[in-house]
Amino acid sequence: MTSRIDRREFVRRSAVTGALAIARPAEAFDAPLAPGAPDLARAPAAFELDETTIAQLQDAMSSGKYSARAISEMYLARIDEIDRREGGPMVNSVIEVNPDALAIAEALDRERKEKGARGPMHGVPLLIKDNIDTADRMKTSAGSLALGDVVAPKDAFIVQRLRAAGAVILGKTNLSEWANFRSTHSVSGWSGRGGQTRNPYMLDRNPCGSSSGTGASIAANLAAVGVGTETDGSVVCPSSANGLVGIKPTVGLISRSGIVPISHTQDTAGTMARTVTDAAILLGALAAVDPDDAATAPGRRKVRSDYREFLKADGLRGARIGVARNYFGFNAQVDHVMDDAIAAMKGAGAIIVDPTDLATKGKFDDAEFDVLLYEFKSDLNAYLARSNSRHRTLAALIEFNTQNRDREMPWFGQEIFAMAQKKGPLTDAAYRKALAKCRRLSRTDGIDALITKHRLDAFVAPTGGPAWVTDVLNGDHFTGGSSTPAAVAGYASITVPAGFIHGLPVGISFVGDAWSEPTLIRLAYGYEQTTKMRQPPKFVPTFTP
Image (tube, rainbow, N blue to C red; front, top):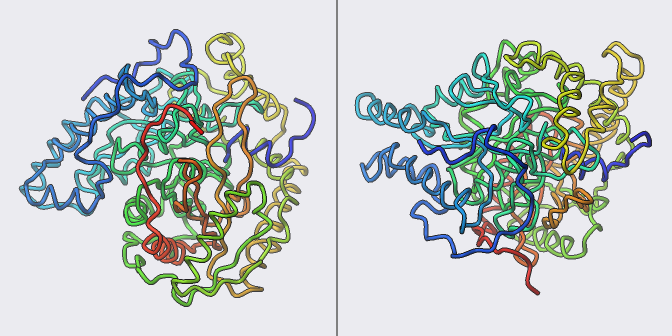
């Protein structure tokens, strides 16, 4: 593709909007799993841990009702039933299960008896995205067959943090291959290694964003919480489309070392959960200064190991919240849900400043894409050079995809790969100019100016629309969203379930400035407790008027 793509097209198509042997190994994928809604032979059975929170799991383990091993076994059985078994929903969100999960859980049970729990994550099963390095018996592939046999040389820093916190890494989730930064006509939730992930609310609908597997799996109660990653929208969009809370933190609050990259100026891991409390607990386990990630150094005095102190039921009272109306208007039903949400905030004591449009909306979209192309080539080449992969450059990946076109490119190509490969080094004047433009328009003249002018604690906007039908012929049908300002600025945002449109969830985003996580968690929790919009999925095959 040689012509420029606009912001919506870019976000929707590149979605930088990126034990039991139940997940098939890479070599078992003779053909990619195509999208579609399977015919349900039966509804999923009731699940004892449905919507169970981290605190409830801790209470169960402390009382002896359940062990960590028993909890992990229940979630593994749930994955088997919901995710892979024919005759079930076949959500296809888990790309690989950790063969050591039960042994890890058993060891944590012994430790609890002998020494007590390490903290709130002790023995809690979670799922992480398959672009996060684990130096164990699982692969780190970014969904690509090119890396389908690669074991990382060491754990990513955040994996080290999770293990130290006592979490049980149950497995890895499917994703949009290469975090949805391969093609301008991509289908979110599809990877060559994992096939197509489905939305558990409506199975022929798309789970959105590159963290699609994490979103779908946590919505479907396949684990307690999950870790995704975002460059632009890939935590908040799948959280919105799957009825979850998603925290996209300030770039640098969470280390990126050991995570397959797109952009060192925008990439971050994020937390995805069914409640604000659980998302905040997981954030505390992940946030830390990493000597191998210079972006974490400025957050030395900002990082907190526990964000639960900001969970205030009256967190909206007295808060000044702006409404970014120029992110509305792409769907009348979404606008109605947002207006109800704003009314609920006002009823809970918030001071609503409406409108507070972001003056720079749409003015840095081309610059963002240019920055991402430059940084993707540079950052990915550096990651591959340190990896155990035999494919050590972006050019080698392009060649692999070309040679394996039938498996890797049955639905869409690698136009973004090709565009990135043509870029020069990060010393190019064009890159430096684009980056400066992004920072000025997203930060100084954008979010910072908006918050200062209106004296806001945060502003809100619709996270996105209801999930679209998965369409391999035409690619994604992204209709609208608000992820870009915080993504480009590297600032914090949180999405919370706001309502449903014909059975499909939509979220509302709270956006702040740098290091505003405590404030956003307070606001998001206050909103959640006021509205309580989260509902579990029903695995409906398709929309029926």
